[in-house]
Length: 279
Image 1 (spheres, helix red, strand yellow):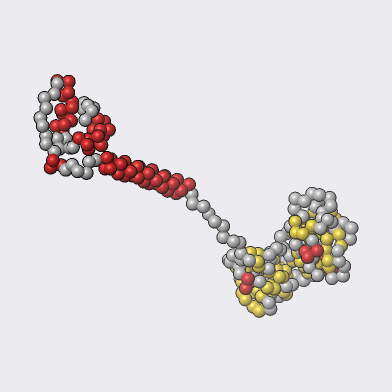
Image 2 (image 1 turned 180 degrees about the horizontal axis):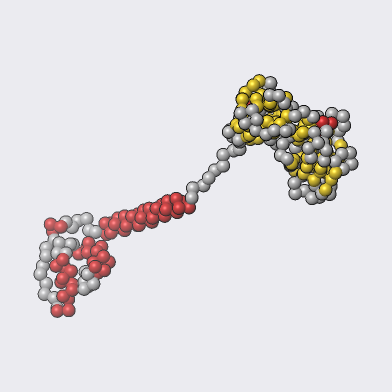
């Protein structure tokens, strides 16, 4: 029966050293992390007993930590954090061997795309040639006793072990792989967004101005006399007082503009030629 089926996952069990296999008499420390609440404890199921609590049935306790000073093969089993109120951690399988070879592998499940390094360790020697097996089949020979998978996938999940010539083989260790992380959406940087927003606002302003000018042009067009053509216009010289010099100048600049159309240019002309009076 699954341990986690009976509780809500709210903690993580950490193991030091960070591996799932240990030599006989190697000290092991188990911790529930930052959970200092006295109600949290570490429990285990072994081949002979179930639901054993740290400090009562095995090991010694210090706050949220539990210590196995001299573990034996009989200490092999499932270990997990328990709050006593329906919360727990994922169970971790710990194997203690009386042999000379162990496989150093991840304690917790990997996610697809993660890198993982497996080490074959001899009790007395380090970095020696080793063979690695997956589900009983030879998959790698290593002169250093190290095997690395750069990007794990679901197909890499299985039981792993290693052998060292003259020393023996390690126990099997289960390598678990879960679905990869979802790709996160990255919003574009501000130095890209701001210019785009500025261009859009400028285009909007220009469009509004063009629409207003078009409306004004249509209104002025409607006010003109459709029965009057430019061929009917006769320019009659006038003698103006000296003070009307600006007006004569404006009429001289636009001699062929009909009086009914001149008012369309009043604002523009008077701003460009301030000496012009009223047309």
